[in-house]
Amino acid sequence: MRSYSPRRGFTLLELLLVLVILAALTYMVVPRFSGRARKAKIAAARTDVLLNIPAALDMYELDNGAFPTTEQGLGALIEPPSTEPLPPGWDGPYVRRPIVPKDPWGKPYLYRSPSPRKGLDYELISAGPDGVELTTDDITNWE
Image (cartoon, rainbow, N blue to C red; front, side):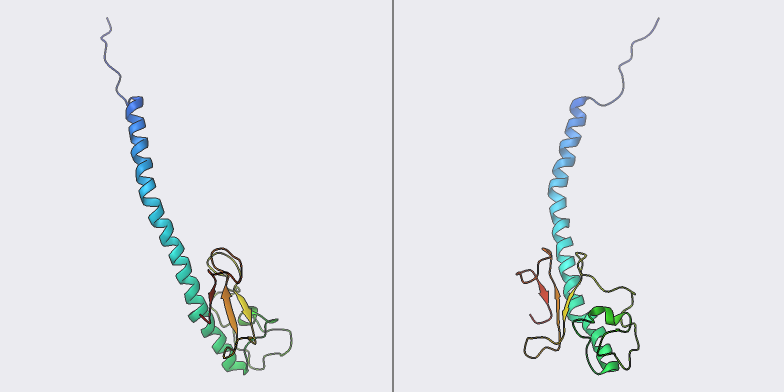
């Protein structure tokens, strides 16, 4: 004869309880990390706009006597521009990676030179998280 033995395993109630606990933990933890990721991207863009790219532009200006024009753009930090004014002492690339830098949201940094703002040789802008220029979340080299 067969002896009866109860099945070993989880009941539906136990599985539902585990799912509720996991959902509650996710609800508490995910917002904390997503807020930090946003802050980290803003800090990275601010570092690029205020330190990294300006350092490369300063080296370009030292070698060539002027900053790249708006038309030449930040691509002039990677390879010598082919539009006037041609840089006489180009000794780049002036950035480590051989690509034009993009902001942490994957958009190109906006560059204008000469700047219409008094006291600035150029403008450098990240359109920020919303990707739209001239909004309150922009990261610029003048504010």
